[in-house]
Image 1 (cartoon, rainbow, N blue to C red):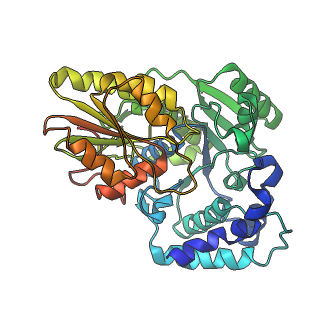
Image 2: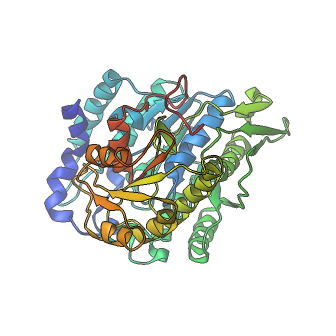
Image 3: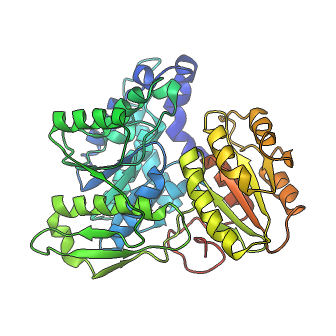
Length: 449
């Protein structure tokens, strides 16, 4: 499978010496992905939703796909990056693509990509080739609707070549400044590229003024309806169904995931948009959408009971505040329990924000690195942590970090393993946590109890 997966990166690897350090607008050419989709007779001409944003894209995509599945639909889901198994990127009704299907389709897509006259210095984005695989597999699986997660941008992102009539926008902040642009307006302009001529409905979290300006402009230009969701953190979000059904459906959420209700409100608004555009899909919806058995891998996922060990992709101040709010509830029932933190934060994340919010809750912090060689870690994280905590230790990898934490913790204590997606993947692999299905069938694993 390593060789098969490598086919997605052949074009990129050839161009890599010519493109490093440059902005996406200079080096990315998503039109090559469009050429491949056209060659396969447009498998993306289906009911598709695109999800973009800076933080929470994956959870929004999973929640939306789960709502639609529990509403009686057959749902394709394309996300990235994977946490443990590459096949996690492609799912139908929460179950990953079989390796045999992935290999067959990846070979077909690679053969076509190798025939294209891509000039030297240009490349076909790996994520674009994988999106084509997803579109082909979803067509074979006769899905009713598909949810795609964009890469870091949208305007110059290959996944965005998939035709989509609905877009869902997670919170946007300044990130990937080298690739997307040095200002928030630059980043917002790239993300607003999710609005295309085919897009009819855009659902968004509340955003800052600069971001809203870019999205209002894009929606006006393309004639798309734009809805901002003032999420209140409702534990029971609702999907509103169009005529002739004309009713609302409550959603039951898993417990214990601090930010889930906010993201679920936006996902529910995305589902409402889906049924508004394709009302024929609303005929099978039950009176209650039950997501209590949904698990979001790497998002407040319990990987061990004693001591309670929870893994989450916390990379900036806002997501850390959700963790702090959850910690306050946990502390109410565990007055004498100690809290340990294991951080895996590369230098391009909001290290200061995460540490300032969470270190006051902790007895100690362990600073470690992800195995991903493309991420840059330095001593600044540990130095910053030492200004907030007395007990700070540096470790090279996940195993050393967990063992160092376990020496300090007892059965009634809590360990939080927090960091970038690659670090989360390392944690899930180390603890052999379940990531295959999005639906919980047994413990351990799943959401925080």
